[in-house]
Amino acid sequence: MFRLALQPNRANAVWEGTTLIRQELEQRSGGRIKVMFYDSGVIGDEGALLMNCYLGIVEMVQCASSVVTTLDPNFSLLDLPYLFVDEEHHLRVLNGPIGRELLDGLRRHRLQGLTFFSCGFRNLFNTRGIAVTSPADLRGMKIRVMESPVMIRSINAMGGSATPMPAGELFQALRTGVVDAAENNATVFVAERFPEAGARNFSMTEHFANQHVLVANRDWLDRVAREHPDLHQIIVEAPERILAEYNRRWNASIEASFVAIGQAGVAVNRVPDKRAFIEQVRPLWRDFLQRHPEVDPTLLDRIQANGGLR
Image (cartoon, rainbow, N blue to C red; front, top):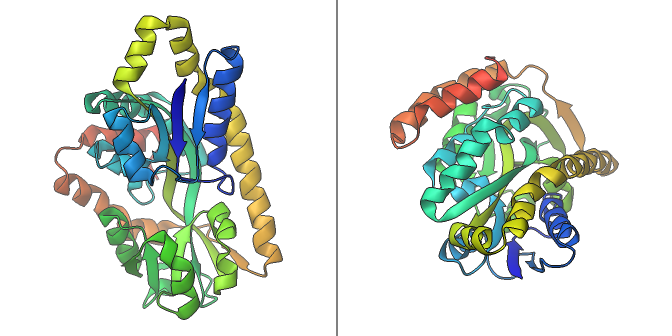
């Protein structure tokens, strides 16, 4: 028996990843593995969950990759704007050798990464009803961002005025005009009812990639390997076995979210040519490496090469 925890609830499509893992472990082990499942942040937010996993209080957790940067700065690379050409490139990196290197690198921090769950890309939405097609459209627009230095600098470079704010304050901030805009994926936009807060345009800028990571306490996992090698094999194989089904469910949730967005009367603005945005933020890549000399610079080059240069 072990504990598996995450902050999202079933309204968030990334919840499906951990649920599939739990089902796979219990079914393949014939009930020998029992998972105590804690969702909706009932035992802490993502930062607390990761620390509890590090300390061995919780054996396995799922959290946003940006939370992992507090332990391993190499994960910060994944927060860089326009790092990935498209979702195919994103998945190839997360589920290939580069992703595995990042996951295994967590062993230095008393953890073991098991898999990444892609959450697609973040997009801009605003209460002004502006169809964002170029950096000029963002001038003077106060845009809520996560409290991440990389994201703050990125939104400012794109032309907006970044306003860091906890997620729980965003609905009211949009409704009262404290901010004009925010950014996230379509499923969160619908789940958090942002159209009811006055968001009338959803622009497909796809400026940040999103991903969650499933991690286990290293000492616990190594102990399972010594004492129950067959169960250890089931645990480490489970992510690969469920990943295709997770991706299918995620894609279905995105499609359903866009249907709901249309029904809410929100205009969806496609941005087929993102070169102006990319040119604005490209200097941040090298600036990031200068600010973070502890990050392996070859990772950035390899991620770019993996997707083909823009």
